[in-house]
Image 1 (tube, rainbow, N blue to C red):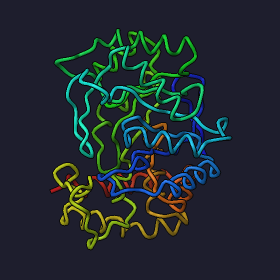
Image 2 (cartoon, rainbow, N blue to C red):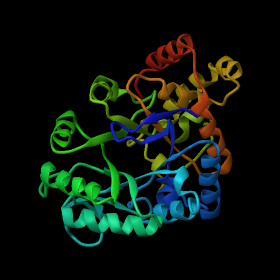
Image 3 (cartoon, rainbow, N blue to C red):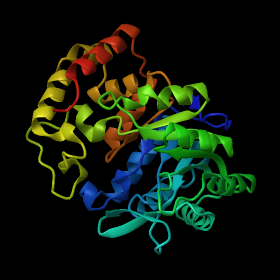
Amino acid sequence: MQYRPLGASGIEASVVGLGTWVTGGGLCWDGVDDGESIRAIQTALDGGVSLIDTAPAYGWGHSEEVVGKAIKGRRDDVVIATKCGIWWEDDRGTAFANFDGKDSNICLRPETIRIEVENSLRRLDVDCIDLLQVHWPAPEPEDTPIDVTMACLMDLKATGKIRAIGACNLSIAQLDAYRANGDLDSDQFRYSMLYREPEGDVLPYCGEHNLATLTYMSLEQGILTGKVDMDRVFKEDEFRSDVDWNPWYALDNRKRVLDMLASWSDLTAKYDCTLAQLAIAWTAAQAGVTHVLCGTRTVEQAEQNAAAGALILENGDLARIRGDVIALGDPA
């Protein structure tokens, strides 16, 4: 496993991190088995993964509770990253989304952030959160000023509730504002070989300003594993059934991706790796990328994802993969 700094925080974390959105379960993920999730998390730790990314909104606290059970007795092995800002306890904030029949708001008021932090500490059963991230920027009409939010986060850091501050899904202007008002250490955003928009702005910005980058959906919810074949049918409530949201899952696009992946059989043989490991290693090697978050349902997936953290691809193979994904083009 490779380890890289979380910005200027003084914390080092595994280049492959464990994303736990799916661990929260619910209709959108067609349920999960908590026992298998716990075993998978512990397998990831055994494989050198130290970074575990979760959030209160993942299963409305359930993901944090499962993570807390899995890391019991292994706190020193773990860099815990969780989030704040998705609020569902009352009507404070701006309407955001409905998941599994529950309405949620974006709220970055200091009073709700403090409640969220105490709830996360309780669910995770820890005394301190290593990296607290703003889950989404505050939208209008309740657009909490960034300096107000950062003042709260800096106070939480000063009092030892958190060790480092991160954010997710920010524009360059928002990154500037967060940095101007406190110690921002990381930015989390969607990035994969099939979704490379951050290469034009966010990735170079983070590299220039020493911000760690936590990429999510780097396996595009599984399509880059090669295991989502043409016969796979998703339930109506699952995220992957919504091809407007992720058009790579439309059958014509899926066929194009599968054909590209099949053309890399010589690379998986050369590196003795799976397609998922190849995609993770490629992502981790891109300029500005420091950490790649990978979700998992099973012990086998956790073991394989962790092993990708030690895989180093040759420059020529990195360039070949990039050429192939550029030739693939955008989803039709």
